Image (cartoon, rainbow, N blue to C red; front, side, top):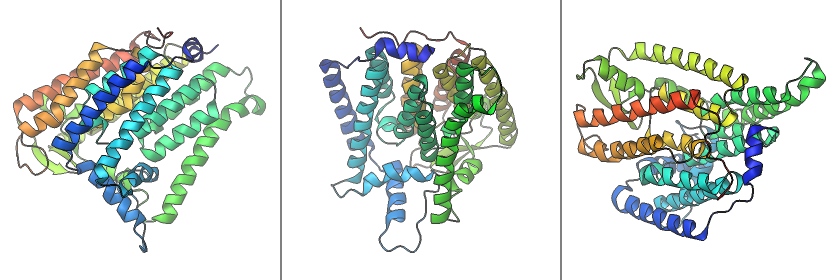
Length: 407
């Protein structure tokens, strides 16, 4: 029996307790209130709203796609068009509903303890990360793909992975892991068409869905359908990224860069950023190959390999927005359970954004031209913990005990 499937079979049927759900309802209600009262400036939700308005405008001659996100992102964005009061509140409500959907999914398919860990991580990461961004949507789609793969439902798994790519690009990095896992479990004795056909069906489904989505995008917006790729390539180094921290450390804790507000983030512009781009690309390539090899050798389960892969992608990226943690936390919960290391990462991320951003004069409308030392130190500590967590995910033992029988 497949390892992931075996763990699922031992916990299938677990359900969250009423007390846990009531406590979570209270926590999310408080978070929503705090966000609406203190932080609902509609910065990101407003951008989602504008993208949806531009695309769905009645009688418009053109249908521009979101410049930063793939086409299916318009589905959650369109919620802001519902004419029920403040569109920001409507969007926050959707994220809250999805949060509870993820909790129920993990409780039923993995364990109650894993679901509780997921809830703790999400709550500790703060309302700005959980409720003010749409990243929970692709995160739960990817979680569904991994759970489907663990049960041997490869067509569903690849279909969900394709939907994830059309929501946000990052799930594309998981495709090799799915292919390796399917190959490792099937282990065909002969490389014949008959033996390979079942393993080609899932990737074929993935390719068809992605190509269909991209083809439709090209027809709808011929000049903008590649916008998300261009946007990602053109973005400068964001201040919270690991490369930004390394640049700061190598400069001797000095101001080796200037502040730039662009691409909806606070960025670092420095002469050495191009070299770091090249080095991080090498690190991503080498690290990915290592993860593939360890997974193929059976040292990493699909869940652990997916967690390690996404950690590596974020660690080597020039951007580390706070909401990127949402991509990881469901996987952390089902694979590691409650881990003090990850709780620390979540707390520090919430400390940095929005709290230290505001104190450092870096939020929207503020005009700071340098980075405060406390701000950079907090980011450096968080990034150091994140690099350690990435190493542990790639090299740690398989099955850390999160997905055990419900108690």
